[in-house]
Amino acid sequence: MNLVLVIAGLVLLIFGGDWLLKAAVGLSLKLNIPKIVIGMTVVSFATSAPELIVSVKSALDGFPDLALGNVIGSNIANLGLVLGITVCLGSMDIQKSFYKTDWPVMMIASVLLYVFIAYDEVIVFYEGAILFSFLIIFLVYLLKFQKKAVVDEMPEDDVELPLYKVVMFLALGGVALWGGSELLINGAVGMAQHFGISERIIGVTVVSIGTSIPELAASIIAVMKKEKAISLGNLIGSNVFNILAVLGITSMITPVSVMDKGLLTNDLYWMLGISFLILPLVFFPKKLRLNWKDGIVLLGLYIAFVYVTVFN
Image 1 (tube, one colour):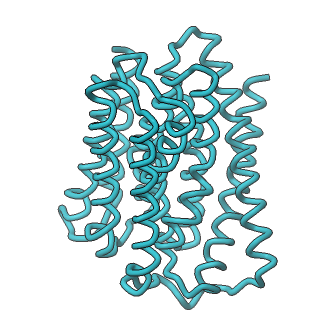
Image 2 (cartoon, helix red, strand yellow; image 1 turned 120 degrees about the vertical axis):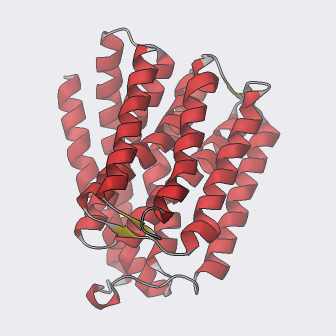
């Protein structure tokens, strides 16, 4: 039964990724906003919805490690697993907004998370409010200043959709991603618990991979359709949303405490390390480009993270 749930979830997520991408491209044309900005806002929010739902429910049900592990693990999976697979499928040209805005904001959010939980091991209401406020400032900046700074990759193959189709694809994509993630997580957690794996390890591996499947689906479909600006924007935006929106909102509803010290001694440092590593990878060996070699490095690091986490 658990295996059936996992397969059904994956099918829903693939369709959801495709519908969401259609909506994102259509919306960017209607509003005359570069696709990377849409990727970092609309697509990121929709693909981060599973993390939000899982984290709020976990924290309210008294499983804070699942909430924290889900976010930290998802951020590692987005860059190690999803970006790794995406650039293995095809090289990716990176725009200047990556190092001027996107990467710095992701690192600031990651460091803020570290500062908030490393010392007192809990994220309380006011810290959540700071995280969420930072997200609002970031979104306002994106829409106001980055709109003119980013160049569309392939404007000639864009197809403008009527508004009702944009709304329909956005709704269908969001619902399919949410429903697919729910099925996948229920099946995967059921399988993991059957083998007696701890809550934190379930959070940073099984659940985080499950909630990163929407990003993987959206990114692979984006690459196949040569919409790579959405792919990278979606991943970085999703990591920013995971910390600032998911943990921000969750900790404003109920304090999020660290129960398993492995989150602080292992998982958090992996998240900070892989987030930082993206910058030198983008500049070396070829400036503003990621290729299959970078993908192998990222995938190798992700496999190492899972091995160390599960078998340590």
